[in-house]
Image 1 (cartoon, rainbow, N blue to C red):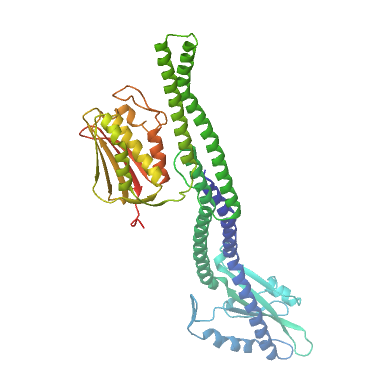
Image 2 (cartoon, one colour; image 1 turned 45 degrees about the horizontal axis):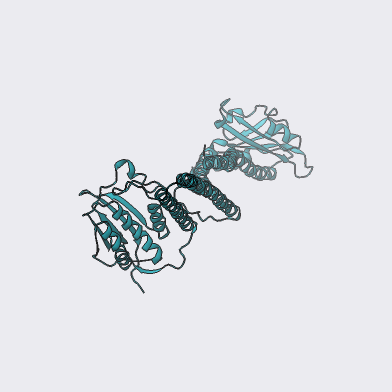
Length: 483
């Protein structure tokens, strides 16, 4: 499981769980809150009715005839009232009045109950005792939708304040079901919208947290695999410190690997010349004939020169690889650089009986270090001359490609590169024998060219030509002006 997924799950568990609890609690509280509001309205209404009945009481008793007259016209009224999602066209209350013993004197809905004893009902019994009386009874047992809420109020004598009886008012709770259902639907829609927003915020939050880690991971993997990589720019102090730690670790690891690699390669390459020098010195110590002594002295000089070239090239490579910026780069005419290299290489071409020509078909402007670019072109020309047999040709061309890069291409008519060697030609110390002498070079020339191209944000390509020979090409990003 990725860290992004873990962050998202923890976020949803905490924030989403809390939001779900609030929505679920709100849904559960809807009906009780509506019932509370309804009961509060019923308390006000029943006490108003009680005061009206008290006004019409005669000789300390409730006047049943006047009670009937009071409520008859109210229950016969028809009207139209649109209350949000609820429509009403008549009074759906139930009103009944009892005497001081709980005997029903009047019932607006069930006249047949008149004369029955209601003293066992909570709304009547508690009210007769001077307490707050209320009850909720289902007309269909077990069906919560058929419940009716009753609230009672005492009817008192005007002089003695004695309780003459009770008046109870009942309201079916079914009338609020539509209101509760509509409110529940609105809450659920709001909950779904809020839940979707929480998920989106959680995804964005997890991406925001995990992206720096993912970018640093990709950077570390690129460093591990030896691929080009730049340290990502990240916001935040802690992430910045982590970024700096990664950079320091990379530098330390690269430095250690760099030293180990160069020590191994240098040891490997110097091992053979040192063995030759040691053998020649031992023979010279035996005082051989003059002609033998001269030959071995020349061998020592040649092997010492080889060691010197290897060391010089390694130092140059190390210097190039350590340069992280492009200091003192300026506008360079790559065609002029190539022309000077060709002119300087003519003596070597004549010795090898190779025709070396230069073709500047178009300007090739770029920014860079003229000396390094000249060395890169010179290495390519020297390779071409070394692998081209007498009578062959080497052509150096410069132009600006369609990709906007200044190009130097060196084409030869030599033997080409074997297929098995194409993937290894840029490896340090990997070299093929020269056709003319069978001797290998240091194997550092193309590595040096590649490092120079990378320093200029360019590239070097070496391929076999279909018509025979090799094309080596350096591409450097161009600039529009030489000023």
